[in-house]
Amino acid sequence: PSFTPLSSSSAAAAASRRLPVGVRKPPLRVVVTGGAGFVGSHLVDELLARGDSVIVVDNFFTGRKENVARHLADPRFELIRHDVVEPILLEVDQIYHLACPASPYKTNVMGTLNMLGLAKRVGARFLLTSTSEVYGDPLEHPQKESYWGHVNPIGVRSCYDEGKRTAETLTMDYHRGAGVEVRIARIFNTYGPRMCLDDGRVVSNFVAQTLRKQPMTVYGDGKQTRSFQYVSDLVDGLITLMESEHIGPFNLGNPGEFTMLELAQVVKETIDPSARVEFKPNTADDPHMRKPDISKAKSLLHWEPKISLKQGLPRMVSDFQKRIMDEKR
Ligand code: NAD
Ligand code: UDP
Ligand code: UDP
Image 1: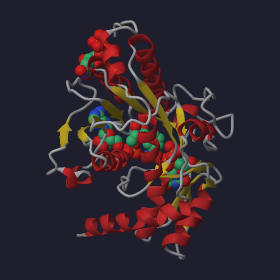
Image 2 (image 1 turned 135 degrees about the vertical axis):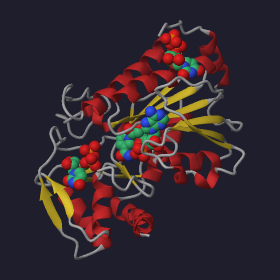
Image 3 (image 1 turned 120 degrees about the vertical axis):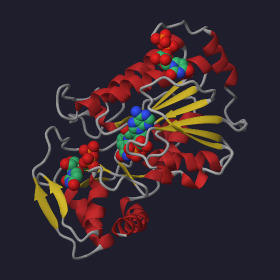
Image 4 (image 1 turned 90 degrees about the vertical axis):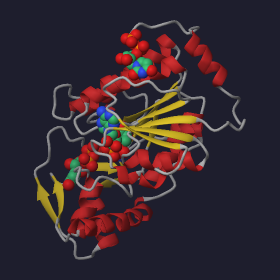
């Protein structure tokens, strides 16, 4: 892309749109790419509830129309089936860029470039949902935003890790070069209702397996750790970041750290005391541990998660139960 200096008209438009902190904003026009997905659909619920108009751009690769079906009759809601790898023209104030499939290098690069080009043209504020995966298999624990990461550029997971790292680079380039107002969130493992049933993530796997009376598949020795955040805490963090005066990156995650065996134990206690585990070989390059240091978000955004794993897990079980029952019909 050809970069224009900070004084460009789009930067001026963006600056004029900025209101002093604390002033109530008029309803905004907001795009949520990936808004038919797990996190996106919860974010859409919140934005509509506070009075904004929302356009969801989604190609339904992993998302589902039923995640946003309740809003289809709402005149403030619009659903566009579109692949963000292709350019799109819209007139909006804010862009939450969540679209991201399972093997996502091209979407992360082309999709992020297009959404940044859109933000530049209309002077919208742009938020990237990056990931804790940018830290790779971390040599620093817990991970602070200042850590540059430990990523294998040619491994099986690198299309995701390096894709998001490139997306962060593009985001900062458009900020520095074209004056786009940007925000970067680094999201740690998040769970909750509407998660894909079968996309292989550990919380959805363990919950679905236990409800289906199958053993929970623990990869490797099960001693690797992750930190699990409930989706409403994340949505709260994303909106707080978008509305703040800080660019980030900010870690958004729950610092509560669990081994996979401990997670299996919590699922067992929550759903079925007779649940069992079964060990399977682990995948290559699996990070050994992950836990966010959230002191930056705490001090600058005054944000921290409120819902523990033990409180959050039961809230997704009824949703999973219902969808698994529907499958059998
Ligand atoms: P999801 O798969 O439920 O949602 C992604 C959405 O993007 C889906 O609706 C999908 O159909 C859509 N999409 C994919 N490719 C697209 C394309 N090319 N054009 C248009 N739409 C496309 O995943 P999620 O868990 O809701 O994740 C949302 C964002 O948060 C992603 O950017 C993800 O990388 C990030 N994130 C999530 C977690 C987590 O634990 N859930 C952790 C770290 C980062
Ligand atoms: N773009 C888009 N919608 C817009 C404006 C731009 O999808 O409203 C796309 C555009 O097609 C291009 C990308 O965003 O592929 C980057 O745009 P930019 O203007 O920064 O780059 P250039 O077109 O100068 O390479
Ligand atoms: N995992 C597991 N059993 C499963 C799915 C995943 O033990 O059925 C492990 C996986 O090896 C990893 C952790 O759970 O160590 C988290 O995996 P997930 O894919 O949910 O998230 P990510 O690796 O992206 O953090």
